[in-house]
Image (cartoon, rainbow, N blue to C red; front, side, top):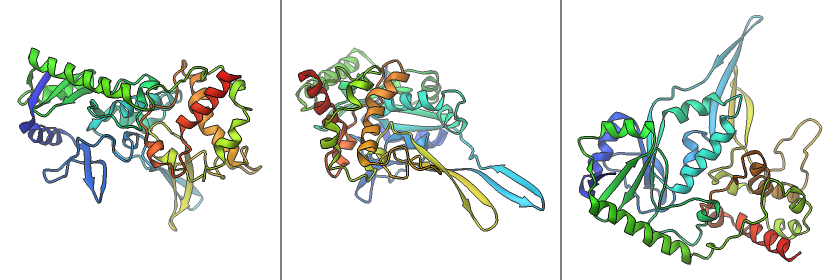
Length: 346
């Protein structure tokens, strides 16, 4: 483990940014989001979660894929891939760091998504341990330990110092570039990290969603939940706004469209939502025509379908964004509690 005094953290950020672009939680216009570090930026490492998840660095909300032009009878196709170099993201919480590994399972599955792959190869995640989890957090239910944040580098922040531990080859290469500032941690530093971890775990044990029960939500439970009558009551408040999918760190649905620019056609990819009525719309219609079916699809995918294809791993990391942002509180914890309790009763 390495360390650096808190008074020199800005110098550390400056050094990282001199080697590669550094993105960090920054407050601007009343919202904290990942943004490019700058000496005058209002950095908010005390803020638990940026409004938008880290997935946008690897799977952006919109991206151009190709362009098409005709020259006489010839069709000219040009790839619109942007160059992907090295970059670092500091302040990624454990839930967001875990979410990237879930996206890897989707986008690295053959045939691999080379747009995503290029960004993942260049991106370095510096994950920051949580010191003050909030009531919307339920990451531990999905096996995430916010005191061991993961990433390429794990970091812990106290009121005196930043502690740093590289976990991957990419993390080690970045750490080597920072040797002028990072020094070896002593036993007192390690004790400080352990003390913070114990305090955080004590907070987690008191959170209202600490006892969220996932028993029964497996890849083999499709028939246990698909036709459950509780879906009718659960979905009725849903507005179909799609906010939950856009702020979710593990949602990965997208659409591909062509746009006539007037001097050619541009093909682009953009995020989509299974909560929308035109999602997967084809010439014969939509396979899920009611909001109940769309609502059920979202949560069955996270709790049943994804585990069925990925060794029992659920497609949720318990970040709590859907709890804080859903305008009608139709979030995944309500689904788990309603279906899970009713299953146990039956």
